Image (cartoon, rainbow, N blue to C red; front, side):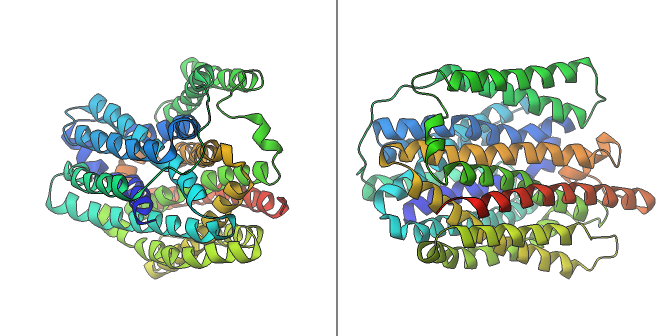
Length: 456
């Protein structure tokens, strides 16, 4: 469990630590403001596209072996990111990191399902939730210290020795125990879904820094069309990337969709709150991020209890309660003004952190308990795919909504922490963020309803 938590922690660190380094990366490598978004989105998009396929590789060649391979690829990607020389190289090397992250995150859940009996998996996924929240805290604190006192390249250099140690630990203690299945990769499905998601995301991101025109419309329509083609392919191929038959398993559809809408609602919150603190409240990226640390700490404390509760009472109660709590926290964020005391932001982040830790272990446990043993890798990969699809779109939509209140260039500059707002502009921007938070509330309520109605 310690080795598995280390992998999840490393992936979580790289989700938050890069946010604090964006201003330095942007200025050092001369990355256009619109391109900075892809330093984050490229990492998440690759995990989204590859999660089910590398989960399938785990079913074929051994989940532990693929998990260890993920460590090696992640370390290689980190090393290359530290050596990046321009915008194209840093984004390309983040893609390599994403491949390693996909191998780690898709197979970690399957390894746990192999190692732990059904009645103890909730507690086990509570530990992985703890690893994620601790990693997020480490990313915020360590990222701030590194950016302040060292070079941004060190946010990637530190992954190399820690990753090597983690690989050594994995080789020493982890053993494959699950049965291996002969499967084929769904390359047409991967290509059509990848290009479709890229088209839609590119259109949304372009809207954040340019007007709607024929080019944006083309990417949007083309992306949606390719996603439709993907759905047709998945219904006809022998071994699809997203096997539709798994949706006939009770609880699976509702659990996966709850994960998608939760990601769609919540991932943007981190960036919206940081934009509020860095823009209208004129805080530095480090100080703004440190205000959110208590929420992550609370989440780590609640996660273990939530996992045990899911084992005793089933996943419906803790998962649904967690989503309801997160919805309340989003409503709280939507009330923030230019004069809101900063301690209120801390309290809301505490509430949000507790809600997320109630949801994640219970929902992961529900999916992996429902999955057939020969499909642990695919089920774990599908969980990561649906969650990351929500996260990727959440991030893009957050930038788009924020850019409706101020000029697009200013919105990106606020996001990377290179400017702040004053007077009426700050008030208009804050009101614009309220709309984004209320949109997130709607998505979170949908996730809660899906969680509540799933079967036992």
